[in-house]
Length: 496
Image (cartoon, rainbow, N blue to C red; front, top):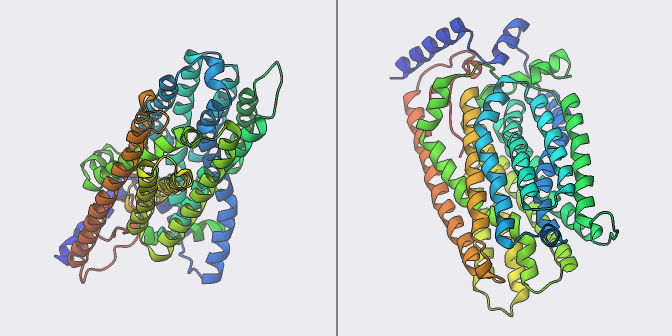
């Protein structure tokens, strides 16, 4: 059985090379005529250089996409509802239309991401959504707000899948969770900056502009500037980066162990179909949906929840700051632990469990327990911290460039579905406590825990099956860069 699997893999290699369908890294390395032996010191220095080259820009993109889409949350307590004459249910619909557009655009943006230079495509989308953010300041009614939110969802749809793809083409599996965590803490820093900005801008008073209008204008212009920098500074892949010739070879060679490749501009329908036939796709999709019902509710209604505890708008802005701190600490802790021990699933479960406790505190503590409910609100921010671990799970466990791009789209569509459902759990009739919405946080998080346990068990069984299949078989040269999927490559092993 081992020799049969080895022979089949060699045959696949011959077919891929004959048709020119291998990963872009394969052709690059073959043209070099040598394989460089990596020394520990030189590799560490290279990783540091890569970190400084791309991680700050990835963080800036994710920070701004989170901040820009949630500015409306802060604007709601700064007078946006009154100035535009919208109700609570209409405000919920603004979150809905954003995520519906985000969902619809994921598949087209995934295709364009594979066909176009990744970093250039990302930068263009950052610029376009920055323009949309600035346009919020001239919105006077519900219809104009809907139009801007639709366009914002369209352009922000490119951010997370682009960053997942970029992380996968530069880092080893063990390095991916901390790096995803570093750019994903943009959510926590976005919460802190948004809260401080809201507090600061509320002290602005003038006849010409409202405080929330100035806030949208300032952050929109900052986003446009960052998008321009991304377009001209961030490399599209290791082969076309500003690294030296030797560093490019080192950057590629060190990723052989991933078995996930770097990049392939050929769209392969068979890989797309395989994505939808793969059981892990649907488990990851339902984990993402169920965990993002509470995440969507919290991100859209955190200020409203805190205000419902009896605080005024300025106090609400300041009391939102610890939510960002909890998010940052839980993201860093969870991602560091996942990278250190190569255990994404268990860390996801731990973060969801903290969120379940927080939801229970908000839902079931008596009305007078204001401090306990506030602590519960802060704890629910741990739920969103599991998303970078799901991102890194997908980056590690999907091989074949078209399959990776397709799964990134499915993952973000699932993210959208959860965020569409989440805000709808908050209804005017449940104000000011919104108990049904808080119970929904507990239930959906518990569902995500069960599904995560099932997926982790499935990965364990598949790895053991492949170990038996390949027992005694030799390594197929360059299989890592043939653009084979994780199911086509029997040497591939799934991260837990």
